[in-house]
Every structure is written in structure tokens, then in C-alpha cells.
Amino acid sequence: MDFIRIKDFIKKNYIYFVIGIVLIIFILAVISCSKAEATSSDITIIGDSRMVGLCSYVWYQEDNGTCIAKEAIGYAWFVNTAIGKVNKLDDDRKVNIAINLGVNDLYNVNNYIKKYQDLATDEWKESNIYIVSVNPTKGAYDKLNKEIDAFNERIEDELSSYSNIYYCDTNSYLKKHGFNTSDGLHYDNKTSKKIYEQIKECIY
Image: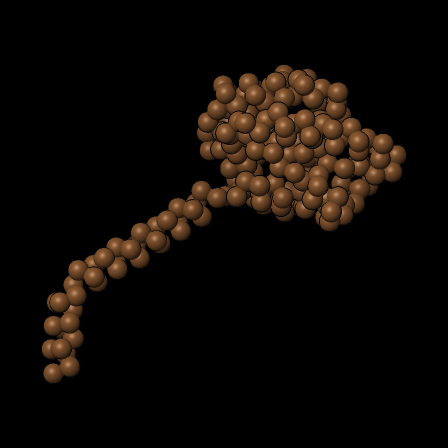
């Protein structure tokens, strides 16, 4: 008797069961898709010696991202070398491009701004471009912090109207939560990881 009642109930509410199953499948598919899209391997990092350090750590390498970085460089290297290397990458490696440059040539802020604007509307118009703030210094390099803040402010203000450029303010985060350096300029493992986690926070 109970079985017959259950059978009748299912017949009367068949459409609701079907809708429920379809909704469950749809939700699971969306969750699965989101996880597939939000992978650290689609981040390409461009930077100077600070990023060379970050990219050398095991926790970064395990994410299987792309790192294009070199010591003691700035705008000229970015234009003449880094951009070309990015352009040769597969499309899935150009989804999210995070750039951390400027500490070696803060005076080049206007050139950086112009180049970022050009890239956002031309070669990298299909990419999400994350400009990571120039980060703070200590000790002998402490005198750079005012210039760093001015550089970051210009970058954020001038690029805010571009739909595919995002400013990632790791500078404020480090000032608030603290940071360690080996020489006043280059970061240790712990601080580099903080920066990387903030970059991912900006992207995902």
C-alpha cells in the first residue's frame, strides 16, 4: 500500500522531480567550471628581482604559473623583452597578466602608464592586466617610499578607467601587516608569499 502511494506521489509530482534534478546538475556544472577557470597556472607574472625571488620558491612553482622576471631591470626590459615573451605564450597563459615593475626606475611612471594603456587596447586587449603596486622598502632604501607612493598613486589614477586593467595594492597590505627584507629591498620567503597570495586575491 505504501509503495502504491509513493508511486502515485511521484507521478503527480514528476515535473518537480525533473526540474530538481536538472537544477542539481546545473549547479554542479557551474561549480566544476568555476574551479577549472580559477587556476593559478593561468597567471603570468612579470617583474624585476623581487619577482625573481618570489618565483624561486617551491610554493610558487607548485602552482605551475609562468614567470618572466629578471634582476636589475625596468621599463626598457619590459618593452624590449618581456612583452615579446608574453606574446609568444599560449592563450591560456595570457588570461591573467600580473606586472610588478617600477622600483628600479620610478621616474619612468609616465612611460609605464602609456605602455599599459596601449597594451590594454591592443596586444593584450583579451587579457586581464593586473598592475601590482611597487612595494615598500626599509633601511637604506627607506627614502624611496615617498616616491613609491607617488608612483603607485599615478598608476592607480591613470589606469582606473580601463575595463581590463586592475590595480592590485599589495603595498598598503604590506605596510599594514608587516614585511621582512634581506637588504631593505628584497623580500624573504614569508613576505614573498604574502605578496603572491594578495595577487591571487586580486585575480580570483
